[in-house]
Length: 287
Image (tube, rainbow, N blue to C red; front, side, top):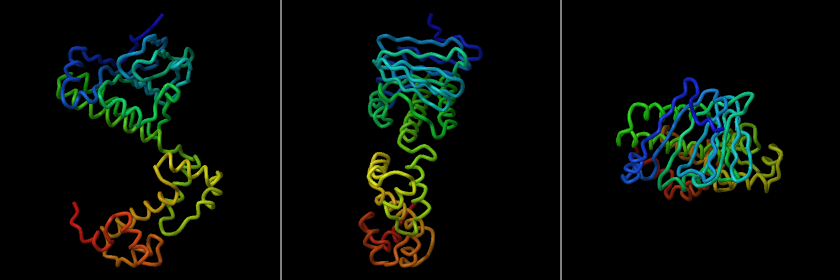
């Protein structure tokens, strides 16, 4: 038998569907609106089955215990610091483990921008889980969402909650794209960040993190949209901008600080990235 709610000390907010319909007709909240949200602590016996799917997308953040999600005929385990993402219209079921039931924060969302946000996260029936780099941040955002809806569900409040949901989903997209601590990509990125003052050979970096150069390049292209050297150049140019903005160092000295012994070559690289010379960049009015 399904146990949808009724857990001790739970928090639960359901926006009336006429209010949801009105929000979906307004200029901003029609792009994203939270329809339901809550917190279920140690949700013993929790079980939800939707053979026809749901109108909304479902976001479940596990912060303790464990549970499972059935999606597209495949069951996946959900453990702490993991988010399960269930798209609208897809048959699914989910529930808490019997021995150690999960504690979850969750929300349901609808809106015209949902498909783009889902695509940015890379979520789908075959990839429903996101491991969080910063679970406290996502937990705080869901807490804000629930707290706001507990106060009232006025147009202004729903607008504020839409912003929180946007931030939550984009944070999930970042966590899905960025590498886990200790993974080859994370180690390579950290190495490049620590060496903005010199050149790096892709083959040497690949050997250092234990993958082939081609595989390392593929990891960087998936995470950043560009290759290893393009990412390193971006880091060096970011450091150059910082020095040009915050110090009076001559351009030649800035070039040396970011690993370019030839200031003319540095200036050409800087112009290629920014569309203007280091001197012209420094002269721009900023802020």
